[in-house]
Length: 330
Image (tube, rainbow, N blue to C red; front, side, top):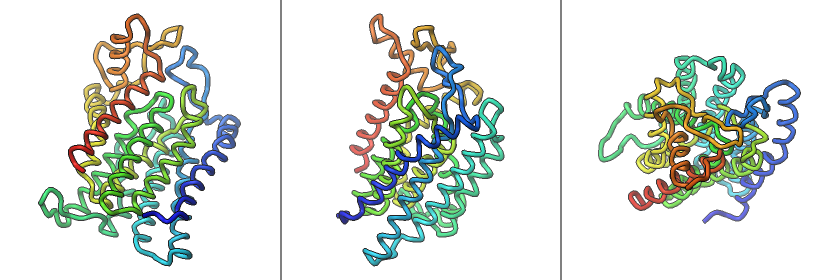
């Protein structure tokens, strides 16, 4: 069982995010790091960007406080190397995302090739400690696992977690759901330390959601999506729960397929009416967001689809996937 003192990293990460986010929002407006809120009738309204930077900072502080508690109070250094490798990977992914934010999505951000190269570097800390187990589904992958599968996992999860995005509260709520589920999965598999690490990020995201939910005061930016995506991959690798983690990631696999259908050029944003209701902007679907809008407009009998309802519906789909994953794999 978790020692009661381990509630400290969770509370620390939560309150650090809660305290510093208003300061960040104020500062971004001063320096012009603000973005359009695309799914609103007045898209000219600017919202603070890259709030995920505070989330990553609070997560690192929470994880370091956990290491301090283990070292000075619990007198154990087991998994300390793994945690530092985890933090390094998350930080490199976060820096990559922040650079992408600064370049700006409207200007194309980082090139796809350079983004992949940077995320490849993010996987190196896991490679050098030979993270995880090379045997999956009864097959021993040997060196192929750390040298190929780990980089693919980190790059894939980091990049694709960024696809299902662009609606107030979507990225943060999805992160909360998936990481909470992974926390339960790792706890049940005997990796309670990974469960706590997952919860530290969940508590950061809960505090961030206060500011990111509809109507958003701050956007997460790629700094958050890349970091959370990388963390999901890391937990799957270190916890040896790749199968259930991939299953939880089904909405993002579907989103990736839909994005590829549009050759990665079609945006997930909606067509916005004057009353704030949303419609599918294309004749075809290029994201789960478009499917959610279509579905809501069809079933609500005269009512219309709105941004927050789109987020709720996608979250409901994610919850159903998580429940089914536990039924199949636990």
